[in-house]
Length: 299
Image 1: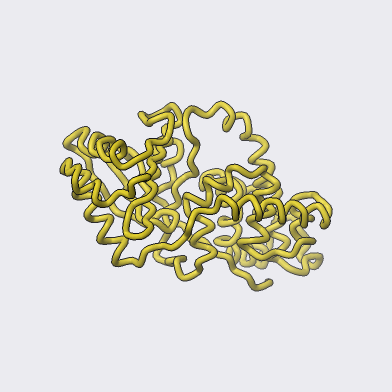
Image 2: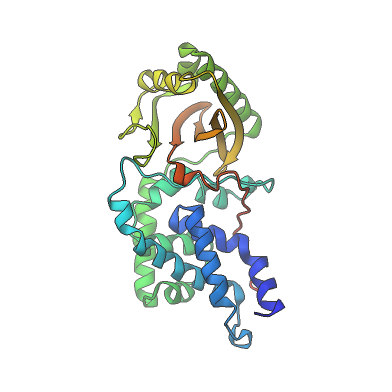
């Protein structure tokens, strides 16, 4: 390992982490992929590398796909809905980059779960990061013509199901989130109903290790009482606001225990989706701020 190896990898680390996370939906597994990729990178003769960005993206994509295949059985046996791990973003707000912001949104990550692993990798590399078809072909082990077909199929699939992405401005988001917290913590059903879209959906991920509904709860009249029950279940609940996946999020503690992360999606000044991640395995790294990037220039 040379200093040049380390410097190049460190410079691209936010990009590489973002690629791995969007393919895996797991920050923990993305960290493992980056660690393994770094070790492999350290053995590469740099004189053979023309474009470090493309080379490392290829390396990380291959390792991420290997991780997906290794964990496929765990996904099949998962109890209840599977949601991606929440991603706590640091002070570098990605919202100015609309493509990046949408790509890490919980709604988009859930949608990407409906693709095959290769379709997902191809879509992410092409549509989010703008890699050329021949670079993607090398990363996923397919021919260029096949990658073009996969890219078209995946793009059509996503566009047909893509949620509307019109994030509310920061002031509106903060105001609605504060009102939501106040209503949920005080049991104000009318206040909650005024904030929830009529067809709001709440999806909870407990993974069989925490109490959570096994199916999404749909409709404001059903979601509001459920929220009151969660936030008023005990007197030692403490809630902190955070930016997870470029959305307002509430990090919920019960005493000294991290109980879950609730992400809020807002459209037309109403809350349209709530995601509750309560599986303790998915909360291990949620307090670690992450940097994400699409870094488009070659190195």
